[in-house]
Length: 309
Length: 309
Image 1 (cartoon, rainbow over the protein chains, first blue to last red):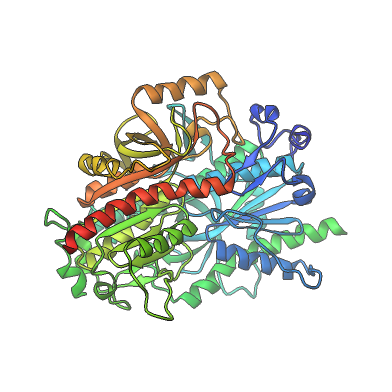
Image 2: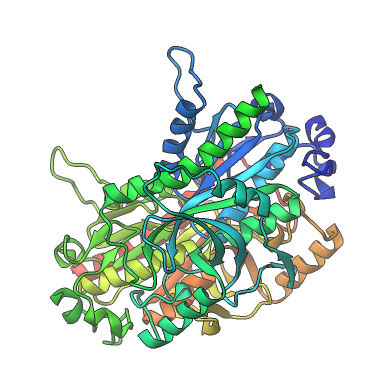
């Protein structure tokens, strides 16, 4: 498998993104959850030009974003052609718009972990260089007006620790979950005076559950009081946590292990200091969901146009 | 919200499935990831007759299963009608076939956890009684011919412990993950002499990652040797673990907390003692995926027909 063997020196520092030495011995690598393979697909021809990977939970939202990037980058598809989902399974959806790869990740860290393993290998095999990854998603905010955008400085776990604990072969391996600070500032500066929303940099707490894991009172089970919940949420706020979601910790950990520059940009769909339920009308949520997309699109456009000059 | 207040005594033991006392104080409960609400939907009218919940990762596979149940239960839809997805979001897909509710759960414990919180509340509000839940999925097998079906006796974590550790408000809450032994035996006895596959009862290890978490050598990262991997997998086999997947631990824990009878039936898509990659052709995988569906359909059919007599 030439592609993989030659493709092992590809992140910005010149070292491999996919550091697994066993990959070199494989005759074929089936990226099972995408339905792609190093033998059946010419991954370098398909993905060689990719510079940016944008990922979010919902496959429908990723399709919207791919179409949005097509417009933003002023790219025209040949007559009779449309964007289509590259994945042949229904586990993830994947779209390619010039240098931008758009992939859904489902909900939760195990789901994003499978996608990232496969997309890092994919882009390694494709010999991509100097990549930047973005997670664009939704989250619960803390002390922010709903609809605000949070750029993550550091992802932390339920104990506010900036580590992701991987369980492998009966042991726990801890990896750091800080994100690129310069990129966070660059994303912050992508705001525009005309924007109808605030954008802030803050720490993000990442949980394994939407209900009890985030101190909600409206799950099927709840063994704590409203006071317990509020004490915990205020503690979060006081240590600089501005939003809560379910993927950033694993995302940041895997980006660090791969040596890939990465950012997390999420829109808050409610203020958790004021409630648990998401009651904003669907149409308004749709508009809010476009905000992280807008910010990241501005960043990509700026970088892309700079390179074209 | 009358439905919820009256609906709080609904599992087989006569106590509430959704034990959260805060639900009683809510005027409306928005089941956000399904796009349903206690105010906008008459949940009792829609779901009151449900007796069985079947859940699996893939939404496409759940649609196939719903259509299969329709045939198996000899139910006829009125002319001009077709089954349709009840969820108005793309997070999950949900189908209803008479007493059988079919819902996808995505990949990993955080994803199934959100679905179960919402479906347990949904069926509580609908005043359903004597429910049985099944997870029907795919898994890696240990020492079994690929395509074999494993009925889970107990779900265990990466340390082989039969507990699910929920992280809430900065603390860890451990809950047991054993499943109903009688139901497991009943499912085992649903095999048929004409079946082209083996069916066994065994313990199931549940992980948070498909690659390193399951000791694979083909992820983007791998810091252990093939010998380390094989030692771990043989250790699994020796403590009675027959398959590895990514949802059973959380599923069993939440079923125990809700007091709901539940079973996990998965087909092995490879033998992990012999490899890591899933290389079986798609068409054969499709046929294998039908096996857990067949076993659970036989159980449901048997119970359903017994009740009709």
